Image (cartoon, rainbow, N blue to C red; front, side):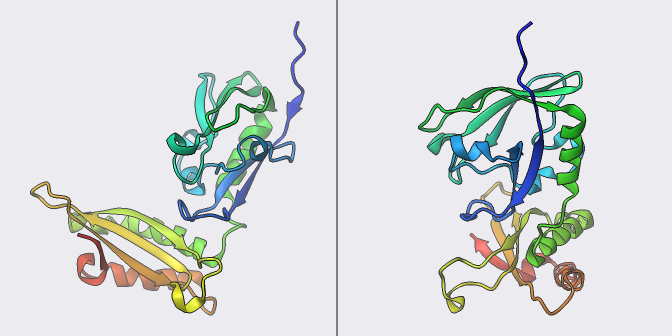
Length: 239
């Protein structure tokens, strides 16, 4: 029998990317035995955003089953077609989770070797990371809670609009404060024309402060948005 690689330990770490223009949410970075080996083979790659970890367990980016699944495990902040991405095939085999068949489509063909995890530890770590809020800054908490409130309300649908998303708005590094928006939350929604034309996008820029509980600020934001046709209170983003 061929010797199998020893079992490794998976740790998932929330990290706000230094270049978060593509997605200001934290990425959920997989560490293998405490080492970010993905950074060694795909240094410009970002792991899936924490937004993708919401929802049922089977929908999580690193969820596994007996059926092999090819997963983009890191991608650049542009597109995979532009600068390449790192892929791995993952599956569960009894009490072991296996990552293999790595593929690196960037300018290097370096990839990790076959990696095996104890399935119980692996599943527990996925559940822990999905529930982890310890990394959040106030603007992350505000964005998450406001998005939950707006989705549950169904408010935008009542006005023929679609909620595009809610994002934390971070201060631009190395940009003087007077030249950039204060930290906070951005909300964007879209209204499509019945004629099939492109429609219009709208948005809110909401400032989050440190002197008031985040929950109170979110309630105030929601009250502002949910009191009238949002097209009357938001700013036009795109004609």
